[in-house]
Amino acid sequence: MSEILRKGDIGQAVADLQADLRRAGYAVERTAIYDNGTRDAVAALQGATGLVVDGAYGPKSRAALANFDVSRLMRESDLIAAADRLGVPLASIKAVNEVESRGRGFLADGRPVILYERHVFWKQLVAHGVDPAAYAERTAILSRQRGGYAGGAAEYVRLASAMQIHAAAAQEAASWGAFQVMGYHWKALGFADIESFVATQYRSEGDQLATFTAFVLADTTLHRALKARKWAQFARLYNGPAYAENLYDTKLARAYARFAGEESEAVA
Image (cartoon, rainbow, N blue to C red):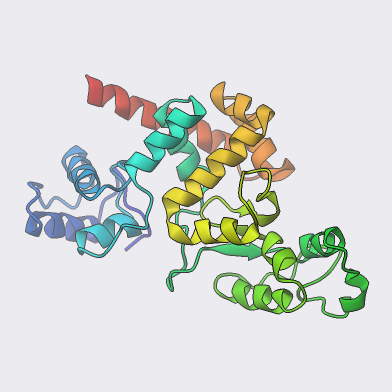
């Protein structure tokens, strides 16, 4: 099965989903076509379990259909709260959540997704009054240049090694959760210390979204771009110069249009 099934998809995976939905009590036909009825049934499942309602069937909806615990996953109410706090349409937040988040805020073992940045660790050691040159031979975790990524759970191995040198600086040198907010922003985002920031990322994807919301609010230009739906400017500020290569602005615009259209259909 593909990672995410959406309206318009066809095939055995869709037929299997329709069969599973029928067994769960949703009135859908087994057509092997991801049609409006299938989308509406998935949206109903998402609404009933509190998940983000987008009508797309992915790992989170799959977990809900299997009656797994989804309490730490992103919820529709989390997105509504973020939209209200930022003063933007819900469709804007749903677009950002779809395009700019990693889709999942947690690894399979329950720890938050992280990416450890060795070049940031160098800077944070300096900020904490530690001479990074004394550990310069440990290039896997400390360097003036970015790189050395291990990916997935292996990033925690790198983080643990760095924490042996300086725990706070190491945690500040990682990006955390679904929206990959860097730890060193903890003070600007209103946290008492880096430990409080990290503990929040462990709680839920909703808490990770709240951290991202605080990050946007702390950057007036970024917030203004989001409110005006200037997707190219928002993507450049959030992702850096490479945003255009990855078409983040185009993806954001398309996702917003789709979610805004779905909201209009629901009202109608």
